[in-house]
Image 1 (cartoon, rainbow, N blue to C red):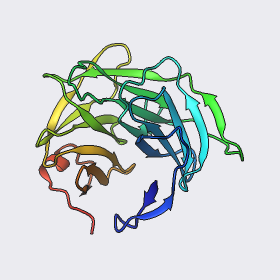
Image 2: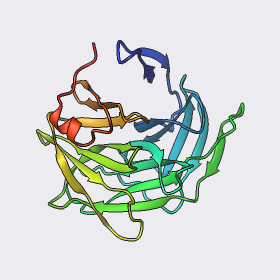
Image 3: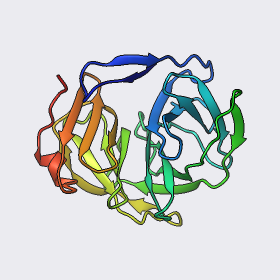
Image 4: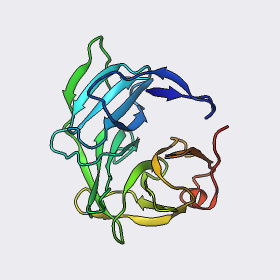
Length: 235
C-alpha cells in the first residue's frame, strides 16, 4: 500500500501495490529525477533489483543490479553524491538480526531518468558502487538510513537498543576500503524501522514499531538537533 498525508496528519491511501514480485517492500524513496514516482526494494530473500512505481501503486520499471549482493536490504535514501549535479540512490544492506555481519554495505547508484510507457520496463543498472563500513565497536542491527543532502553524510539508526544509536558515514565515503562509522549520539526511541530527511534538511521522519516521530530542524542541525531535541508525534 502507498499512503500519503497532509503535513503528517491523517494517512490517506492513494494506491495499492499489486505486483506479486514486490512481496515485502522494505525501502522506499521519492524519485528526484522522475516526478511523482517512487523507488522501492524488497527485504531479504529477493534478488538484487529495484522497482519504480507510481504513487497509485502501478509498476513503471524493474531494474536488475548485477554484480552486487542482496543479503538483507532494509532501507533506501536518495540524495547527491560524487557528482553534485546527479542524484543517487543509496540502498542499505544493513540488516543484521543475528549480529554476525561485521562489514555491511550501502550501494550507491546514479538515479536514472525513466520515460514511463504503457508497459513496464525491464532493464539493468550497471554503475552501482559499494560503500562498505563497520561499526567502531561490536555489531548492530539497523533498518534506517537517511542522508543529509547539504553535507552528503549518510546516517544509520540502530534498531531495538533502547536508546537507539546514531552513526554517521562522513562524505566522501570510500568505495576502495572499509569505512568506519562514526558515533553521532543516541535517540530517545526504540524499534526504528525506517526514516527520511527532507532535501532541505528541515524535516526528519523516523518510523518505529509503535509510532511515527518527526523532528523539525533548522540550519543543518544534524546530528546535534536530533540527539538533543525530542521529536513529536503527528496529530
